[in-house]
Image (cartoon, rainbow, N blue to C red):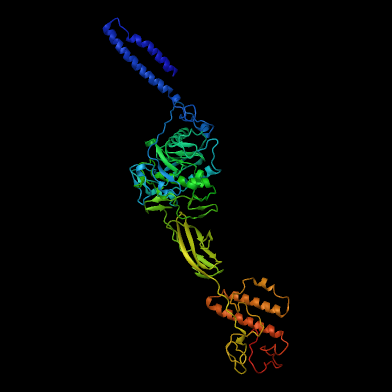
Length: 639
């Protein structure tokens, strides 16, 4: 500015002599006029020169003094200041918004905001129509760069950066596979060819922690420090220049800001990250041609997990897992619509991520800290689906699913009975193999394991077992099987004392035994008056499930009472064993158990009987010749 003042002073001193009276009218006047024009031209040139020279001083950084946009000249003590080369005399490009802000991830419960940022393209709901190309480029391959903007005094959760870096590395490692949402992009194309699932990212070279201090708030977002889209572009541009990173449609830049830092589209916008009805992320671009810079604004969604969280954290880092989900949304949209104007979107402006926002499809399992629906490079993630024109719907992979098959034996089981479940006849899609099975037994329990399982139920009812078969490409298929569970039938009431125990004299042997003198057919020895009633009679209640060893220990110490108690517990064990027989053998098994029990009771009573009245119905002793006494035919104990 001092130079400019000096030049103007000199000019003021020269101009009077150039325009003053001349001693010679013709040539002098002519020379005077030419000289005046020359001086005016010289003044204009000098003025332009002074303005150009003063431009670095006039273009102060919003972050403080100095040439803010000179590549390599960064404020603060961050990594970029230490590692980036210092480039002198190079003015940074001041970015400006290239086109429509796109791929806005809406807050959960506000799905109608998953749309482009152009008012004429906004609609209240997504439509089911497919995506269409609009004459612009796609990313045939993509190189990812992550900028973690974390100035002093701001925070990100422990392990946040490493988890995001791991995810981006896993996306790159699985390039070419059909087993995750990135495979859906391969159906889209431009005039130069089709998108290839070919991503590259290296944490050591493609990720940077930017500790540059935040500029003054350029907007208002729920009382938080707030950055406009233009301010974000300036920071991205400065980092790219400092690092010497490339531009163009093969590169995408992810700017991840710290917790409790908001953003808006511009200074007067109500479209802000954490305001009511805000967004979780968006993508945009500035520049053109080989200088096109494709980027995504990634606010720290952990600031508002209620609006941007997934409810799942398979990597045990809630903030990072939630950020990865919306990052996947923006990354996929940047691949299919990098310049936000000529890529793939539907008639309402929705891109492939917009149409499936907050749709997570089928879970593949759980890590203990949260469910997952995607496996990339052996790690688990919970990501929204992406739109597929091939199925006119949201897709989890592009792989053909395996065929799941499931059988149960038996399909009708008793409470406590083991049911054999078999999915070993399931088949994978051609060219792949089955990687695992996830089981749900229909009673609130499940497991991840092999193709064959055994399970028993503690309650009766109809249980729906499901198995999800997962193949090596991430494809999955689920198969249900209904199992009916019933309670064991109560033990039938043993025959009463009126049944009798022996046939009348001379009646001859009959099936089973008959009551004395009546000739009536019976099923076993009758209990005399006062004999204990078998368990379950007369109430019909089933035998106690108390362990026999514990129950028998409670019997009296000795005498007939102990023997009767032991006989009762033996009967219970026999009935329990009958329940394990096939259905057509259970009834005969229980009848045999009852006969044996009644015979034991009779033997115990007769052994302690000392009067003829007490010995009524007891078998008579053999004679010395080994023959039974004449009279009644008696069924002996144990026969």
